[in-house]
Amino acid sequence: MSEKAKHKTSVGGQALIEGIMMRGPAGNAMAVRMPDGTIDVEVDHNIPLVKKHKILGIPLVRGVVAYIDSMVSGYKYLMKSADKSMTEEEKEGDMSKLDRWLTDHMGPAMMTVIGIISTVLGLALALVIFMYLPTLSVDKFDEYIVRGADLSKFHPLFEGIMRIIIFVLYMWLVSRTKSIKRVFMYHGAEHKTIFCYENGLDLTVENVRKMSRFHPRCGTSFIFVILIISILITSALVLIFPNLQYVSRPIWILLKFAILPLVTGIGYEFIKYAGRHENAVVKFLSAPGLLMQRITTVEPTDDIIEVGIEALKACITDNPEDDRI
Image (cartoon, rainbow, N blue to C red; front, side):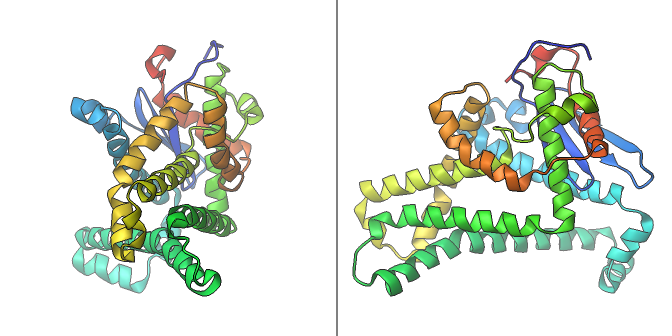
């Protein structure tokens, strides 16, 4: 690739198990380091839902659709990468006796059902940790610490701060595990490779290695933007409708669910805006996510950078205009 002028792009990606998935104008490209040391590249020329149906591409709506679409496809690529990167011996070792019995007697369909059930249970656990636990902790704080002072109007703010604390602690704890640390190295390689491309440099290991691993359009930044916007909207609702501060906890949690599409839509529009602009507001809202990337990204080794380069090369076209934001 010849050197190009510096430009902003819509290229994004996701760290996988021993691999990286990149989204670009040529489609989704997944590069995985195979057990024999080679790099397997798979390109999916799919069209995002927001581009398939014009109505799904309108502002606010497209953010929700794009988020769900990326969650579904991201899980698919994560499972594929895990399967590709493992040797047959490792696959056998990871499979419990129950897994083997179900596979032998019930077939792949049963394993798919079990996978769906596991995903649902995982989501339920996440909702308990990140939705119910902050609300419960603020209620208990009122009950046992404050005792009498009516701080209900500040509950959305306190809950939001508690949710951020829980999220940061959770990510820090999982980052301590060896397998997740390696995924975070691939996450770092994803960011550095995209930065190299955006700076118009040739995609070489040497050039990528010099780049920053902190990128403003990262999913981590998106999560923090969502948390901040959620705090602002729920706080505004309580100020506009004071009676909301006295509703039961289940109704309050349902209300937070109800505004999630709006929050996600606004967050998505901000991330797209942040990719095109640099100003005080963008820097302020992006700062927490960039700081969080000190946990969720790790400096990659050269062999991991090679995977990022192959993934990016496979998802871009020869014309840089194709992938402008």
